[in-house]
Image 1 (cartoon, rainbow, N blue to C red):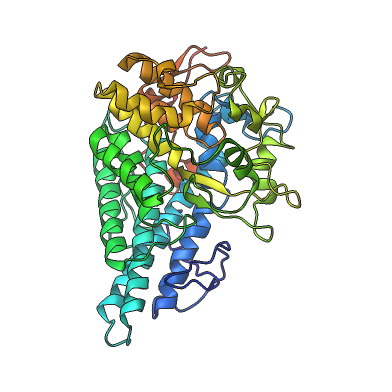
Image 2: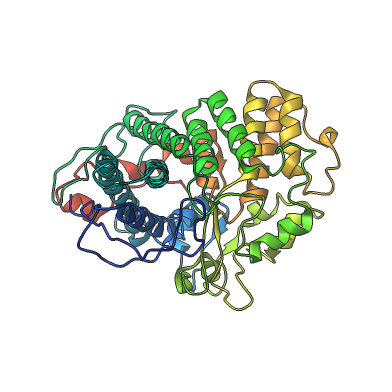
Length: 473
């Protein structure tokens, strides 16, 4: 394919050891030689991390689409940044959409090459004189690549294919399994079901290798707790709720900072509000993209998008916050302070991908769907008590329908600005209110494959009729 091609770049060695992963970011430099040593596996992994955290993917665009295309955020007409997304003016030539596609497959390509190279090095471990600690490191690096590959596929399949629960046999994504896609290679799209099967396979491989390695990296990396958090989110999309719940419980247990229930006081209110202006790992972080003053996204940061570029929250999103909710302290009028940055660098903010609060809300939703009302309320209270008008579980709804409606709004209160809503609404079958349009069922919409990819003639299966799913006036 034209755009899904060999994009392997190595990165600077960050001084990462088996037990102490450096929290600096994932800087890249080219190299001619790949996968001849343990260091090369590490370099390949860090190259994938760099792509995950860059602005065309979770550093901005793939995150922003989650809110701007779901009635949470409005782009500024005057600046033009994400205005067309929030106004649902969609074209197959949108540069942001093409960047998400390209970077998603860049991540998949880098991960696949690193997994392939890493396996070859492990197969020759005795010849290369790798000791037990080095073998464990290699397995940890390969595990993280499997996890990042699954993460990239999850976002791409949610944007460029219909939801699994509504159309599992529909067109999914081109699959990169064991071998990278060759440059200019023709490739067909697999089904949505097959795409999720690939995601599940990569998660299983990530789990196995993480366990074999015995290494637990920090929350700046896709270690065991992040793998379980990803598994929970993926299985929610599949409708396999009990598996999702068990993974969420495992993620909370691995975090080891409270039980995620209503009696859990981690983090305290002040710590919750202040953690957004810190680059340190918090009791909430399961996987967070690390940024630094020397390596931030500058004009392409989420802070700039919600700051000088004038993006705001919609009135509908703001309406779900109560006056005594501590999360209103993260609002500056109608915009967010979650990415306010450091006093010395406004564009420098960590970007949360998986948080403990998400796991508690996943468990609450699963229990609510199963009719386990008291259990659902207990886990829901973990975040709901941030609204000081909710003093106990008795203030929460007591029916499945009421709880699911509350959880839907609670996910807005908790994750506004973090890009969850589009993906939540698709799997929950929610209708979104967008100014100037009729209530819109996002599950009936799919974004087009970028025109440049189609026109190149190597991935020619467009989402035919995608325009018919756009919101109606």
